[in-house]
Length: 389
Ligand SMILES: *Cc1c(COP(=O)(O)O)cnc(C)c1O
Image 1: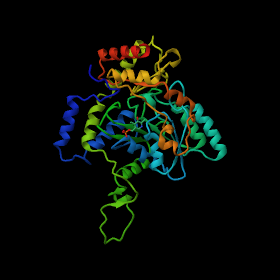
Image 2: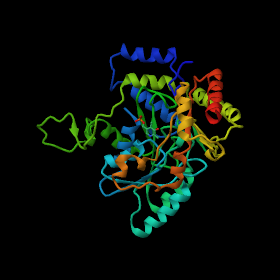
Image 3: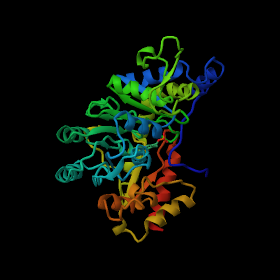
Image 4: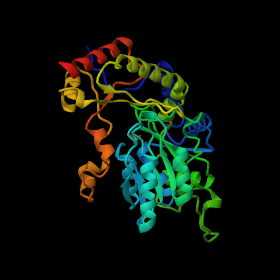
């Protein structure tokens, strides 16, 4: 049996042709395909603006900067996420703190958020920004988080790296109805890919302008954005902020545009796989993902929780037994504050109890549109063996 990864891209001839077309064109970067990709995603999601960059990590960084995050500011996120959701605050010189997860959805718990805000309000240490992460593609309780943001005055960036194609209360993730900005990732394991890439969506024109500036060195060649200088000097461009080279190339954008045409097909397939897992695993000592009726998940990941009390196998045993049969299960994620880099900042084990409970029994099963029925059956029977043999 060939290796079955936990996630992988799905590339067809249209994708290949789209990339080749750019390679034969005048612009490999800074051409017309990047704005086209931005338009396609903004239209699909129902946001006013979209700014493409070279990764979601870059997107999170400039999204924080565009909201004015800097030294002395406090940013909160969930511990059960990829490290980039927290690192972005550190890049800006801010400090990070973590809000424990909901034991049912594994997303940032609104109840814990409300309690932590009440306490922070008393001690004068309120966050300037909260970054909810739509884990596995299932949207967070955004209405609840948004209501708290009104009360306590923080900004919101949705880390929707897992969730393009998902819906919240019937509307597409990315419309920013309950947030200042939404970030997507186009890494090959995610729902659609551009090879590497990310995007920031927003309904605020000023923020979009700031994001574009920061994406490309802080340079502008737009006359009305420049500071006035002596008339005899030639200024065809000006640097007005400290930006980066976070640009997406047209080669990557072409793949992104092409993949957007199959976004709904991809998400539908992911749901079909989730449904098959749901029935195939129903008699096993595992907890399958609970779906909030308010949400339609993008199903980037399919995470099961082992009922360790009902079996005599350890988390590590099951994980390693599956890996030994060429099934590349994974763990998404280790609580960010348990990483050595974060422990050295003072975070202690036990800080977020629900997140730590999740860490000791969660496993990501293979989940990608190209996973065949036969492969999935093999995965299910390998899991059964790993749990009992
Ligand atoms: C993948 C991921 C990122 C980073 O995405 P890149 O495009 O690889 O930089 C950020 N946050 C979450 C939750 C992710 O899963």
